[in-house]
Length: 461
Ligand code: GDP
Image 1 (spheres, rainbow, N blue to C red):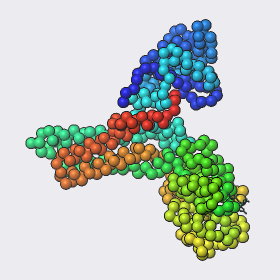
Image 2: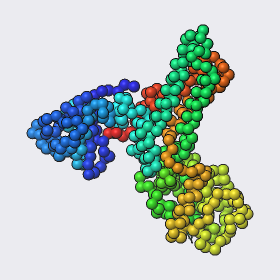
Image 3: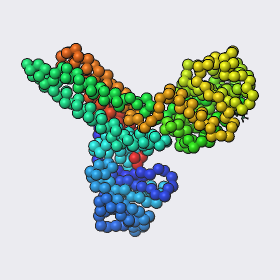
Image 4: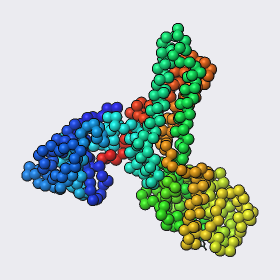
């Protein structure tokens, strides 16, 4: 992939006012560019935070007292010469500093360009670049942990080990093919089969947590259904009143429906309140119904709220029947009031089943217990009984799919070795596995995939 090697500059801190704001300059002329816009005339010393003043114009009008740090290549974030200027976090000031840097010869950085350069210069691999993005965007501490672990190499290291074992095997197989008269001299079929199965085992170890990992990285939507007055808003308030509510909006959640985000044992979940899925003639409600149905399509789970203090009606029965095939939790609410039906009687005339995943609760009770119990029931339903432990190694669907491809190719290779097939067959499967693994770390990733990944960053990252 072609990456220009000019000098780039951008504000690296988030938009809006803040205590500190940082302008980052990277490229061969980073030091001279920085030098041109600060008062200090002697060169910035490597890795030493230096107090100086940013100046503008012919008269060298002082703009702000700043801290400038010079990181010479290759030991910098991008692998190039980098200067970071920490100024007061004023958006106008920071923009002005970037303009001055541009005036001194730098170019405005594109989104993700600093991290792209770090990748191209071999400072980090693609998994780590993606981990930077995930860490920046994390909304739960567990997401941040998983991303940081990946940045530290929890995926990179095992994949490199698998790759190097694979490389060794491929080289030996190629040698056997190049010198056919030697037969299996360079690699014995049984031995190859054993080595390949060990590699399959290692990909398996990486993939074991994959589904949970995805859940942590991507989060999950839960749609809350129930007829009016059963306690849906109360459920929302109960859950959102807990310390697990996340103020940050998770990208990609359904808009226009009342949606709130919670940290459920590290999984960011978006609770979506709907207008109900009943068909209706009312135009505005129909729009609500349409959105609710759309939300249900992407939801991983539904919560159906029922009111135990009032007899179940046709509408309840329909909701129960309509959601029967989904991952569902029934919240049987208002247990503080005299019951109009019991969980067992509820069967009659409804699709309620004794085996249903249900929790009886009084959401009105002002005890944290109700929220805790509902949280526990949601977690259990969401994870289908699986435990949520430490951050799983792998969380990114792109990695999961490529590792599964690699594993598939390795399985074919193992079978070929068992069947004592010609080396060519084995070799072609092993090369497929190599290609898939290389795409994870970015050694063999097509440019369009790289472009997509880096375009998900924002400017200054
Ligand atoms: P929604 O229409 O489904 O959102 O229902 P709301 O959450 O607005 O609740 C409807 C009414 O039921 C309100 O007056 C709530 O205070 C009341 N309510 C909710 N949960 C309970 C409960 O557990 N016990 C009792 N007694 N009342 C409740």
